[in-house]
Length: 352
Ligand code: MRU
Image (tube, rainbow, N blue to C red; front, side, top):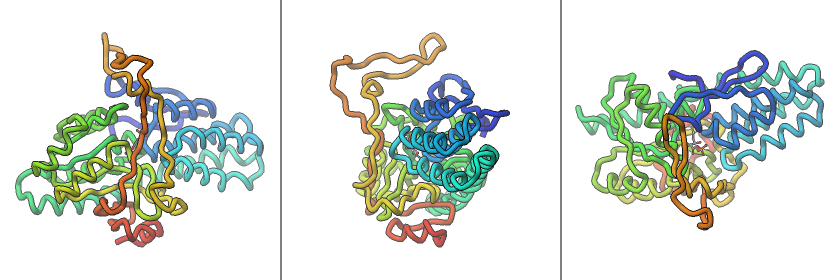
């Protein structure tokens, strides 16, 4: 990873500001609870595991200002409201609450930072394990392809920009590259926030061959037999295996099934929400309509936006969709590869 997405710096933290990518590398310093909450809301940090770690950081920053019970409750509430879909946010906050609530205020700052450090270290290890397990899936496709590159399709960004380590969906791709397997990655642009541009930037930094496509091109490529497997990340996996991920994932899963292409989800166990019975129970974030009314790019060396629709145009902007478990070939977690109907085994660490 050429850049760190989030790290501690003296009594604060620093994030890579993803709203500036891929146009320029910029950082933001987080010093207060509100800085962390704002960075999550504005998607300066994004991707389920990184959102969770940033929320944990926000709690530690809040404790530095005031480690009392009311301040702890306030920090958990403010951060819990920032983005609704990625359950890693709520998982990280629950973990911070469990670590801090019973402690005297004087012990909370040190404990908050050590819990944050543990969440980050675990994410790095988790990503590596997902990479190892996912490599097996790419290896199966490689065996069928002979000397020809394995063609992997992904959606959104579930790489190192979305985590503390090598990513989730992209971890097996990086592992395959390290293993010397020839690969080509189809990267869909992922309107309206264009996280596919982040994936393209990441893969380019790592020298992984890929082609950027318009979101609507995915069906044609799958139908033409130009994709060997699809791997995406996840924001929340319900108990029945239904999976919320970036809007557009469901259409890829449908087209993959229709064309006999395996569709895999790669996610840490912290993304599995056994308290959520099915996809219908997953809250789907609705974001500002201006994200759809504008296109973002670079003008005169500076990131900028142009309007493509009048402010009066009514817009719907659901940020995620739900792929039903029946369309998912397997879920790859740090414990192994598991069919979605045996998810509880993965959640308990018993996957193969
Ligand atoms: O809105 P975003 O950019 O936070 O959405 C990110 C995704 O949907 C990712 O695929 C998911 O969080 C997995 S990241 C390892």
